[in-house]
Image (cartoon, rainbow, N blue to C red; front, side, top):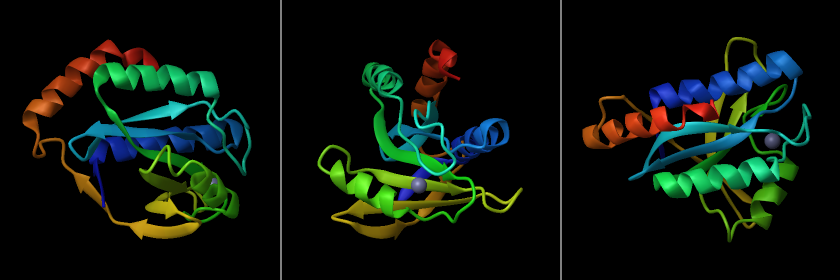
Length: 163
Ligand SMILES: [Zn+2]
């Protein structure tokens, strides 16, 4: 199961819709958080600039990972969009995930923008070439970690530049 704040789910979808509208390409990035809840979404440049594939720009990825270490936030999911296909990992997505499964064992989130105005978001675990769908549970902003969200607001204002 992947728990994610509703506002962050919407933010991720907006990143993906914007990239499709402006460039026609797939968007990609990380969903991060702590204590098992996704509390922030980051967009990372798609170095492929492609409507059918993604590759996180390596320097941007490293800079973000450094920021996450400083904020003590974990990479909980890698997301990317499919601009014209369903919310399911492609053959290449599965191969790429399997290649790095010992380095990243979080979720893969797919955002399908196939139907205009009706984004579909699904989460998966991918291991050894096998794809397993995982439930996504939305958590309201007033969720279980009031103190955590207070910290998060402070951190957000420090790192607003990332938007
Ligand atoms: Zn894909």
